[in-house]
Image 1 (cartoon, rainbow, N blue to C red):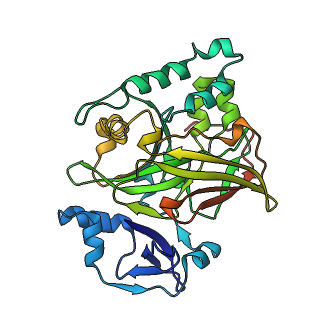
Image 2 (cartoon, one colour):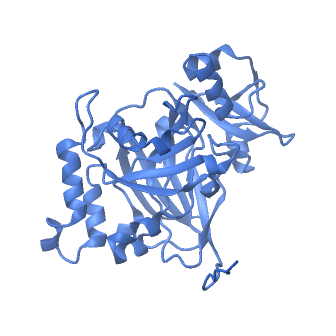
Image 3 (cartoon, rainbow, N blue to C red):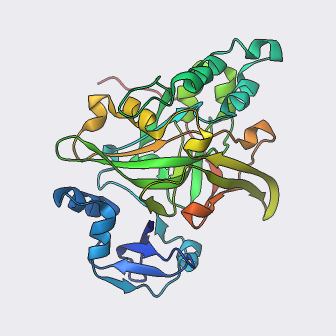
Length: 333
């Protein structure tokens, strides 16, 4: 497998690099490449897969290690679009075994109601029809819109949480990264680790507030995995406060731990022609079963860390509150 990063070099120039998968530190700079977006476009134009294209391009050894680039906050999100408005961030929920239990703890008052909740009904639909035969469409999942490219925060950078938020909690997820070709065909570029941060207190007030709770920043990376994903992904989600570990829990993803296939989730996203506009980038968060919100509340300044060996270096971000107006007043033209 190949793992890619986007980063700024010592001359403050954008670069694309191949990460050494043995030591995880050395980077081979792809000469002439300034974005994964342009490389993916080139692969489509050449009717080539991305891995073959990358291996055909000349490289040189980057002086800086991946750890030093991360420490200097020079690593960018591993995929972006020149126009952030042409990058969609979306996701699906209740896709993992165990995810319904976490959701129900937020949405039900007692165990007697759990069997009748909409969350449990949606989860059971996925168990029964989320893994159809190849070439067939299964049951559609819960789906949400999160934002455009402007909400993506680079690895090691700070989440800006609006002051009207009631919560800011991590969601450790896998992210599918896609580019639509000239004819509208969606191409999967690869996968990355993601933190689909949400406002779970707002969501808990009423499940119809799910859309509001998702309109927050997010992050993914730092490395982009090119190729097929292992069926079983094992990772760990951690929260540190003032440098001290205050919460830690393992999470599992990949199709072996999901109630839907990736193909089914992809079908129910890209079946809408709106999402097949040529040249657009899509980042799709595939859901999780592990949330710190079930155990604790985060505080401004906390650092989130999401790690899975298959994706190399962990994804880290802390968060702070940004003051927003108490009330937005619309002017009449």
